[in-house]
Length: 164
Image (cartoon, rainbow, N blue to C red):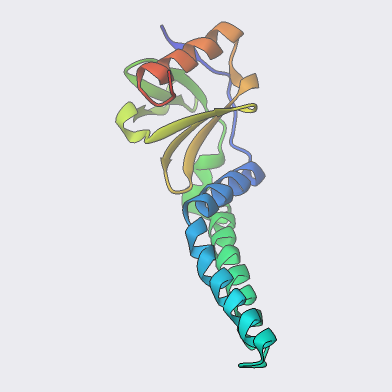
């Protein structure tokens, strides 16, 4: 069976939000470093060993700059010409062999299932993750029927991308 979707595009704001949140989830342990430095600065300041606020301020600014760096990376990806096609409108045909990306009736491309590293389902739809900041978002409203949506989910389960 083939699941055919309506033609849709990935929203740039949604892309930035999801990619940034996913990256912060992966690097959340790095925020322990500035947190530990901030606690050290507070302890040293309030015990009177070293009365200065620069340690705390530096730790906070470092954490903010780290998060801003990743946010700007994903924001810049939406502005670059080579990433323009990520946000174009495509129709998809999904089966157990491949994902066919169709620009129109004659032009398109193929995404093999081995390129998809993981998948997740939430209330907005399905995400197929292919790399850092690379994913497809199949919203619930892009499927032609509820049957297509359930078939898409069963294909993901058979590919072991979603838990059974």
